[in-house]
Each structure stands twice: as C-alpha cells, then as structure tokens.
Amino acid sequence: MNDKSNLADKSIRRLSTGQLISGILLVILGAVFLFAQFLGSWFINAFWPIFLIVGGIIFYAAYFTRAEKPAGYEGLLFPGTYLIVLGALFLLMNLIGWHYMRYLWPTFVLGFPISLGVMYKFASGGLNQRRKNIRSSIKVLTVISLVLYLISVGGMRLWPPALILIGLIIIIKGFTRK
Image (cartoon, rainbow, N blue to C red; front, side, top):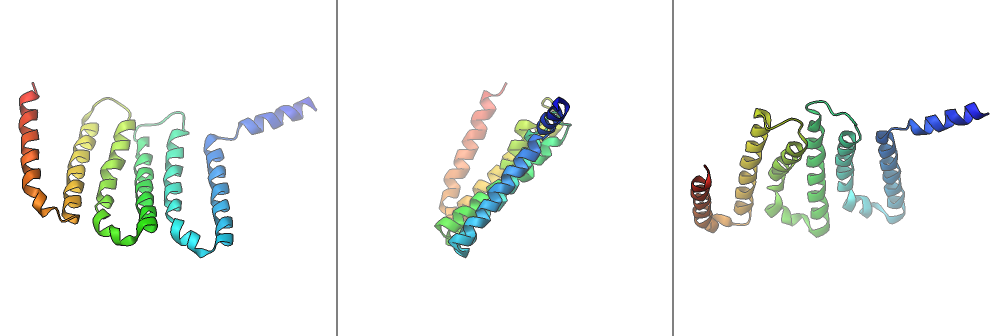
C-alpha cells in the first residue's frame, strides 16, 4: 500500500504549473459563463474583453512557467501583452462608452511598443543588435502613437510647441552625450 501512496504523491507533483494555470483559468471562465446565465446577456456584452485579457495571461503563463527559456522564447510576451492592451481598451470602451474611441484609437498602435517593451525587458542576452533594433522600434512607434493621440484630440494647435519641445530635447541630448 505504501507504493500506491508514493505513486499518488508523484502524480500530484507531476502536475505542471502550466496545467495548473490552465485549469484555474478554465474554472474562472466557467464561473464567468455560469454568472452570465444568471445575470443575463448584458454581462457577456459588457465584459467579453476579459476573454482577451485571459488569453494574454495564458501567453504570460506559458512564458513564466517554463524553467529554461530558449532564445526567442520572449516572443510569447508580444501577443500576450497586445491581447491585454486590447482587452483593457475594449473593456474601458464598454464601461465608459464607445464614442470615446475617437480619441483612444491610437491605443491600437501604442499596443505595439508596449508589447515590444515587454519583450525587450525579458529578452535574453546582452545589448546585441537585435535588442538595439527592438529599442529603436519602441521609440519610433511610441512617438507615432503620441502624434496620433495629439491628432485624435484635435492637437493641430499643439504641433508648434511639440516640435519646439522635441527640438530642444534633441539639442540637449546632443550636448550631454560624450
């Protein structure tokens, strides 16, 4: 009987973290559907973006539960982060009203540098050319996103001061670099 109890102990320990997280997420998903049956369709209509967020969390779980991460494995973080950004945006729109999307649509673009930034943070290796390219892409896409946000809020009047500010930042950085 001792052998059987040891086998049972080993089978419990063999449950991977990924399986545990997947199981927990499915239980949560089932609970959401169960509550939706009691609360009505408005619940799913309002909170469907949570499924995108959960999808992003699954990508994160796949990355963080693996003990040894081969080169490029941080690529799992890009879709995970982007799904979370989109899920948060859509959830916000459902809560405050979709008419605000006319101001927040640049978030679709901003999701890319945020996702790249998370990948950059967890990328293995030193500051090699690939990481430098990622960092450059983050900067360019962030600036594009900020410009799009300015345009979406009627920021045409803000262009001259923004250009002056950017020019001053470039000049100051030029003097401070060795």
